[in-house]
Amino acid sequence: MIKLDHLMYAVPDLELGMQQIHELTGIKPDMGGSHPGLGTRNALLSFSADQYLEIIAPDPEQDLAGTTGELLVRNPNSGLRAWAVASDDLAAIRDMATQQSVAAREIVDMARTTPDGMALAWKLLFLHGSHWPFFIDWQGSPHPALTAPQGCQLLDFVVTTPDPRQYAALLAALDLQVEVKAGTFGFNAKLDTPNGVVELPSWFH
Image 1 (cartoon, rainbow, N blue to C red):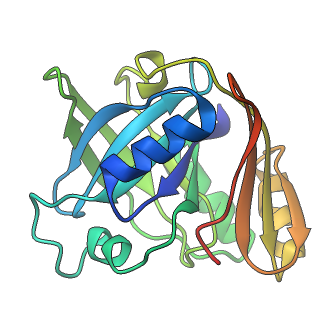
Image 2 (tube, rainbow, N blue to C red):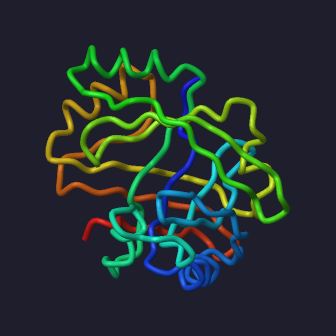
């Protein structure tokens, strides 16, 4: 099982980001939780039973020095910053990336607690370079899309990159059906929402 799991929509302030997505789509995201040590917290909006939008922002309750939260608070942009692929075999993903001449990092353990007290635990695999997708194994934790607000559907997701050949080759090896185009690096998504078809821009602008 390898498939697009979620899109990460980065904002400098979570409440404002939630309001922005609410106004754009007509659906109000729910608070998710904090990511200890990363300096971030999130809110969620479901696309389906196993896909969702994650609005991610700095967590003011954490020390942000040297964290992803610090990076986000320093950047006023709002937009798609990353995307995640679900897999139940991250070691195999790492081997496949190596075969495609893409270096992988170590698999790391992650966890957060939902506002209603549910503990979620998962594993992540990152590839070297910020433009690649990252990979997630939920390890039996309830998928966040199941309880996130519904009403939106992901219609299209496109990656643009100066090196589309290598990017497309890795996605083909993973059998991921995501469009890759040549251009300035970034992401773009189209959603079917109660407000009609809307577009999520790239954070990289």
